[in-house]
Image 1 (spheres, rainbow, N blue to C red):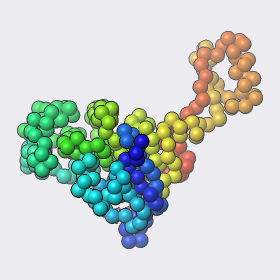
Image 2: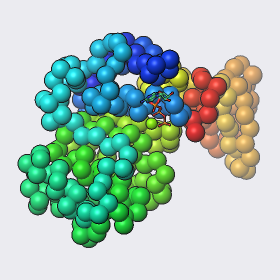
Image 3: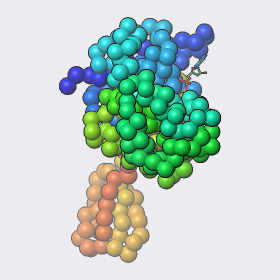
Image 4: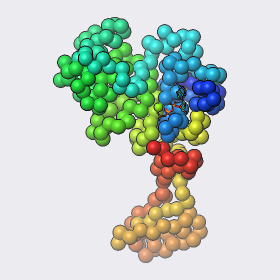
Length: 281
Ligand SMILES: Nc1ncnc2c1ncn2[C@@H]1O[C@H](COP(=O)(O)OP(=O)(O)OP(=O)(O)O)[C@@H](O)[C@H]1O
Ligand SMILES: [Mg+2]
């Protein structure tokens, strides 16, 4: 399949700060791709480069095979962007806020209302945007990003500081969009979010990709060499994956006292810490 997003040897400098250092990766159509890293890692910079809000210092950046800056107008038809909640007119109603964009993109009011319904805001369209909760604002911004049914969605920390219920709602919506073929590029500090949602994740540390792959692959790659044994009486024992561990497992099996065993998989959080020495948040 044709690559839908691609960065090749991207550098982005802000004066003396190098925000991105030789970043290269591809995203395939239909993927949910997660960009993970602590504050200042370069996540927002990456989203801004893809959405032509910034120009790279060097390297090549394409969306659907097209140079983003050169083919800006064409590329904009295919992408939706959610960055932060600052882009709403506080004094206008939810619907009026969205209609400003909808008119510009030739989207009928009916469709706007339908998408509002999908994010659970059908009874809120008359409310002034300034009077919405943060979670509601975030959902309105998501609707705005979705109005023109983009093939690719860029979400910069879509659930940061949302309550768990709203976060789950947004995850559900993203899965549904993805099931309908939308490619999603999202940034997050939240490793559980990444683990649950993403087909592949890239770990970004100080502007460099230090690891990339499907969450299950990374968890296996960095699995400890320990196996957890749960005995029939509920007690747990830990053995190494070696001959000694094997002997103990055999013994327990023969005594019929082993209930379950599984290798210990580290969380993405722990893997990140192991690779970079840095906490994610
Ligand atoms: N417009 C700018 N001018 C100067 N420096 C900038 C600018 N934008 C970003 N930077 C710097 O680039 C680096 C990466 O910033 P970026 O916003 O991409 O990080 P981030 O991963 O999105 O962090 P956060 O999780 O806090 O949102 C930081 O050192 C930041 O200070
Ligand atoms: Mg950011």
